Length: 366
Image (tube, rainbow, N blue to C red; front, side, top):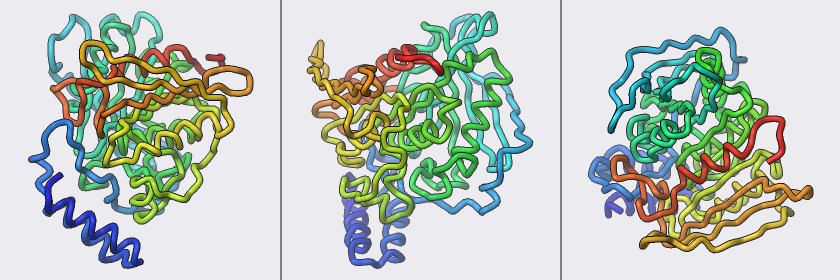
């Protein structure tokens, strides 16, 4: 971590604990905007704190009306392209706001309804970076599904973090959840999507927003994937966000035991979002009283070892999985060097999420 950035963030924590929130906010802004040159951070290091955001006007609480979607030019693919697959740039707007996106369309799309996975990037990332790092488009090409990458705007958050910790971005019909759900619905209406097999996943701030989105719209998403993220409701402002990220939060996650199928990945050496948050995400899905079975997953070919925790509901169904990646930090497990914040040595989070998702559909048991 850049020394000046680390010093400013330590000051912010001390100021928050002393109750001087104005000074703490100023320290965080200095760290994010100038105290540490984020462009100089190496891949596999995520020294970005997901806490700075601008308030959305109260008009964002309006119901989702008059949504519009515009799909633009076909963007060039990263890596080898296959005849018929496309990476489309587009934008979506409704009463809650506007966001751009990229949509991966697999070969032979349109022949029959296919699944859709919504992927929410982490801070400082964009659609191309996140797609390249997770290699989700490669999986979609091989298995036949769409991938939607919403893009956070710098106007809404200077570091392009999804505003998971703000109270007006945590409910159905408000703020970013309303925008993202509306975007998902519009893509479903525009393309041949299987409405029973729509899923959402994300990394860090994107993982926290994915958990919120899935819980806010259980009739839209069939399952969620949360990588290095936090549970819904653990924060509602800046101080509680800092506390939750350090693993010292005292807030109870919203809708504990919601029943939303969720797969969780988290490195046990994550210094940005404390690994204890992974337990909270799993509990928000399966409930704190769920029966947990744990199995060691040995790493092959010098890969990292993991422990896979499976959470069963009273009926015996696996409602959640939590992958504890040993020795890993704040990065997408099994990602590629083509994108930022990835850990090539980890287990393949992309493959495991796709497997978990496709075992589930709306209205069916796992």
